[in-house]
Amino acid sequence: MIQDILPRVMHNRYEPDKKAGPASTVLCYENGSFALLPDGDGLRFPTFKDLFGTDGQAEGLIYLFSIDSQEFFLAPQGTQVPDGSVRMTVRELRSSRKTGKYLVFAGYTAMQLANWYRDNRFCGRCGQETALADNERAIVCPNCGRRIYPRVVPAVIVGVTNGDKLLITRYARRPVAHDALVAGFTEIGETLEETVQREVEEEVGLKVKNIRYYKSQPWGIVDDLLMGFYCDVDGDDTIRLDDGELAVGRWVERADIEGQPDNLSLTNEMMVVFREGKEPKKAPMIEVRSD
Image (tube, rainbow, N blue to C red; front, side, top):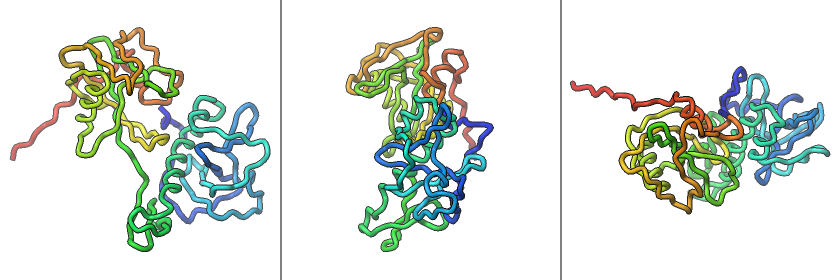
C-alpha cells in the first residue's frame, strides 16, 4: 500500500525550529499540484538549492516530516520554480510512475498538510489571523485561544463476501476506470461497524453480518484514515444499486478478480487478499469480564 515504503521510514515528529539545508526537499504546492524537476528518465521534487541556491535565504518554509534523513519542507504560495519544471497532481504523480513510491507517499501526506495550513489561516470562531503552535502540530488563534489540528476523516472500505464471491463496484461519475469496493465516510454518532452496515445497504441494498476488521491506511488525498473490513452478505444477495454513487455492482468469483493497476491502495490489497483466500474469516471474539 502507499504507506509501505520499507526499508525507508517516515518520521512525522513536529519540529518547528528545523531549518532547511541545501539538500532539503522543498514542496511547491499550489492549485492542487506540485512542481517537479526532471531527473534522468524520472522526476523529483526540487531541493532548497534548486530554488534558492547554496547560500540563498527563504522565508516561510514549514518543516513537514522526514523520510529517513531526507527532510521535506512546504514552500510558501508563489515560490518561483526553476525553468523546465512540470506540475502534477498527486493522482498524476501516482499514475506516472516516474518517482520512487516513497515520494508518492510523501506527496499524498504533504498535500494533506498543505491544504490544512491553507484552509486555516483565519480562526473560524472569531476571524482572527492564526499562527503555528510552537509545541505541537497545531494552528492557534492568538485572540480566542482556539487550537486547530490536522483533519483526519474516518472512512471504511468494505469487502462484502458471498461464499467464494466478492462484491466488486465501480464509481459513478468519477474519473476512476478500475474496480473498487463499497466505501464511505463515518457519520457523527456512528461506530465503524455501523458505517459498514449503512454504506453497504445504501450503495447496494444488502444486509451484512460477521463484520471483521482487516487493516487501515492513511489516504491524504481526501484527509482519510481508511479502515478496511470484510463482512458476509446476510440473506438475499440481490444487488440493488444506488446509481448516484455506483455505476457497477457485481459478484465476482475469486479467480476472476482483477484488482487495480498498482499496489498502492487498501482497496486493491483487500481484493487481492480475497482472491488468494487469505481474508479473515470470522470476527474476533470479545471477552466480557464479569466482576
